[in-house]
Length: 85
Image 1 (cartoon, rainbow, N blue to C red):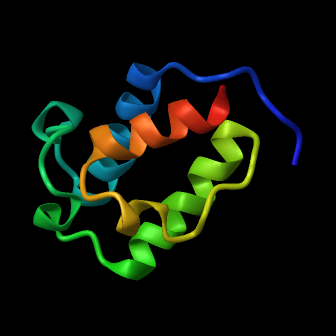
Image 2: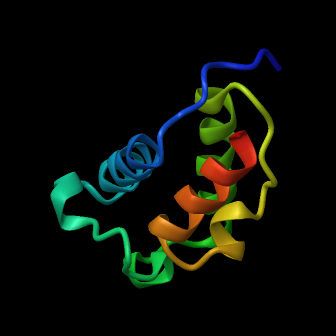
C-alpha cells in the first residue's frame, strides 16, 4: 500500500467521527471523541470494515482490531498519530 502524508491527530478524529456518523445516520458533532465506541453500537464486523477504509485513507495497513483494541476515537487517533511518526 502506498504511504500518504502523515495525518494530524485531529484529522484522524474527524475522519472516524464522519465514518461513524454516516453509519449511524447522525451528525458527526454527535460523536464524542472520548465516548466509548461501543456506546455507539459499533460491532466487530463494522469495526473491521471501518478499519479497512481507514487503512486505505491513511495509505498504510493498520491492525483489523484497532477500533476494538482502543475504546475511544481519541485513543485510536493518538495511537495512529504515534505510529505514523
